[in-house]
Image 1 (cartoon, rainbow, N blue to C red):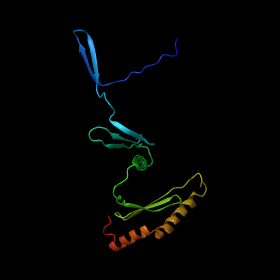
Image 2: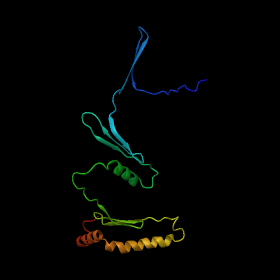
Image 3: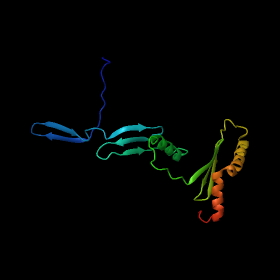
Length: 171
């Protein structure tokens, strides 16, 4: 038995098949037989994909993908978006986001949402590193919030603005 035999797999193709009963002939014409409509295809970790379309009116297309079981779906999609659009530069400065990060250090991050008048903070602790003193690490991060926020110029501006309006503009 020869080992050089190539195995061929079946490929499904859409198209039109014409049978001529007079001479028992069959003719098949596939659909979409032509050059690819995608150029400069790039993909990234997580399943995102970007490409340029070809044709009369070329466009840039981006698809982003996240698993439903992901702990932070928004972060997954945002990472893909940043990776796939890093070659795109805005012509005008971007509008500042509603959420401003005012603290980011030692596993602690704080954001202020000026329009809602809310403060959000998140701490990350490496439990493997702090197996016995994880409670002390949480306390350290809370103390860090209390110390760092008054030192943040952006935070103080937003707090003073909220004080002046009496919280009336903030729902």
